[in-house]
Length: 171
Image (cartoon, rainbow, N blue to C red):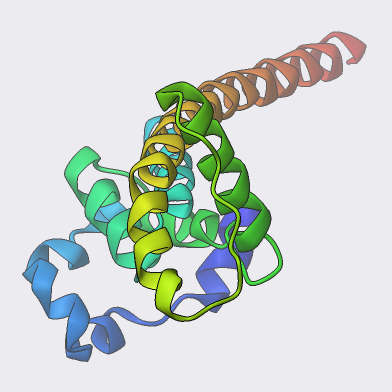
């Protein structure tokens, strides 16, 4: 079901070939392996997308595409998983990552006093705890997403086999 939904909403390969920014990946992006969903490629795509979603960098989608290409993941799902980080969730996610990083590094949390002159200093002081927390959360969510996807896929296959066996026994 997810496969069909993604297939209808993804751009064509010709559109991707003509995109300026995606030319960075060259013809590798058009390899059919990146457009076929199986248990491995789906789990890798979920992990890549969730990891990229936590990174406080611009262009999360390019990070997810790069990781999916590197680890042979299903590109449409990797791109879709990046959108866990959206305008509604980005502030709470990064605030939580900053607090986690500050606690791990044992640095005091900064309070913004509202003046523009101190904004640059405070942004630099917040960078290390934010990156530390975001990296830890990205790795944790990627691992958890990978495990849940693998187990969910396995459960779905086992359920299908069980239903198939029951139908066969009813005949």
